Amino acid sequence: MKLAVKNRRKIRPAAPTFQGIMPLTEMDLIGVVDHVSLIYFYPSHPQDAFAVIAESLQKVLVYFYPLAGRLRRLFGGRMEIVCNGEGAVLIEAACDDVEDIDVLYDFAKSGDCQNLVPQVDYSGEIDDIPLLLVQLTAFRRGGVSVGLSFSHAVVDGKSVGHFLSEWSRIARGEPIGELPFLGREITIAGDAKPLSSFPPAPLIIGETDGRKEREKETTLTQLKITKSQIEALKKEANRTAGDKPCGRYKAIAAHVWRSACRARSHEDNQPTWMCIYVDVRKRVSPNLPDNYFGNAVVPAIAESFSGELVKKPLGFTVDKIREAIDGVTSEFVHSAVRFIRNLDDLSPFQFMQHRKSRDLEFYGNPNVTVTSGLGSPKNGLDFGWGKEVLMIPFADNFYCDGESFVFEDGGDVAVFICLQSEVVEEFRRIFYEDL
Image 1: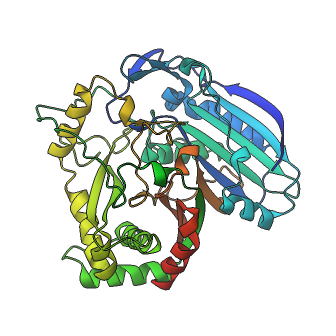
Image 2 (image 1 turned 90 degrees about the horizontal axis):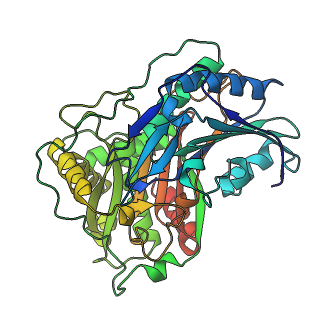
């Protein structure tokens, strides 16, 4: 896919904003700390779409001004936000080699769309890298994509959804709905005893490190689950799970985990993890505001053996996931944050563009990560020319074995999962066979 860049602008807030330092919390500083991206596709757009995007971005950055700043390195992998109003980057591009919307869908669903997201140059100093980049790409026979790259050190998925919802409201000429809570002075760790360590992820039986699995070729695939299929999954999960009702995410995540174990042909006694990122805004005491703008998630680990996941009912897997999520208590969060705070160097816990480097722990086969994007933003992303017809995640560090995201797709749900190429077709067969 070839593009011609027509315009590149730095978009600063439309009014003066706070100038100074904003600290990053421990939850900001572990996990993925570089940029992650989303691409929204629209079948049509007005001629002034670029101007609409630019003007509304200027306005929304007045309220979400940390995204107009830059990061600054400190010590031991720590960073802070310099709120200086340097601005986001907005790119206007044109693509002439995509003939129609159906071809565009094929590009998008195959993952061959890296040119549709703004490219971030990590070769320079970190204080030169924008925290938000936006690319508007128009296609020859109509249609447009909006590619967004956010610094994950600054925002989590819920914060991104809040920002996008308010930005699109402003683009449609509506007033802002809910202001972000930008305070980061809230004490999280309290007096909790720190965790002793984070345990290592399971490896394939007989292997001493993740090198062999890490080096295998991976493929991103998209699977669609209809509303009726989701209801059937929930019904089956609730039939065999514990007393608590099972929602969409747990049912889908359990189905993904079991399907991966089967497709990978694990031995019955193969230990396996599923990593779940849990929003802790309402789990910590005192609570964080629902509109807290930053990272407020911690990883929870569901543990089992492949044989029991595959052979036992779906409800068994759902209970494993529920047990892991329920374990994310206020005490657990305080202890985890205290552990991170006491570390001299956070780098071993930070995943960046070099995530496939041999010096970082491998979380792929026999493990999976299932991240929920359900309900964010809740009503689609409408800048004034209608809601998107397709949205996909995109990031270099997403294309790692076992990584998956679950997103809204109209009334249905789209599952994006990256797996070793040799098992993708078998996974797809099992995934739909068991629905």
